[in-house]
Image 1 (cartoon, helix red, strand yellow):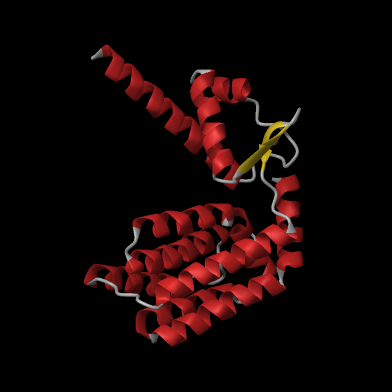
Image 2: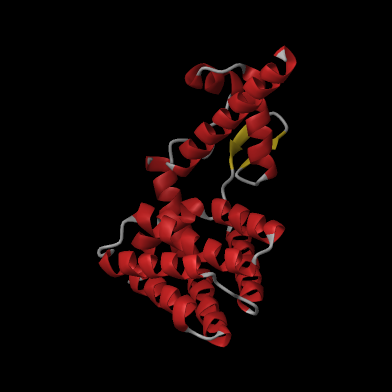
Length: 222
């Protein structure tokens, strides 16, 4: 019994460390070149060093941080080519899901509520833009109803989380764009949705330099 309790405690500590580090990354509270020291993080959140190391390894496997010889763990900073690749993969996966999308009544109700929120979201709030974007794409993935597929979309969303937080600054009328996407998901045909997804991702690929510039500014200023 003690062994089970000990394992549960370690698992909880690792999960807590993972969430804390991830939240700090998403909040621009870690400078790009500053190493993530396990001992310092452990002291800060009040856990032992082992679960922190486990959390760092997990975040590295999810491409949210990176590691290298003599550098330790540092935040993952996307390059132009890496960001373009993420957008391309995300577009391809979502278009695949759009081919056989089928929402439940509950999912339709949630989507209707999201459309109402977007209609009131002016001017855009960065945190809201991230949440609404993730809800729309997770909704498409959920409508496709495939567990591993949903997990992949979720990981891509995590990798794009910080770049989405600067979209409201770098891209005009982003709320209107998301509203169009939401309405297309709700009422459009599969072809309409595929076209809308193409437009969404092409726009971002075309604006990668501006998005990365804004992201780097936020990363260095917090």
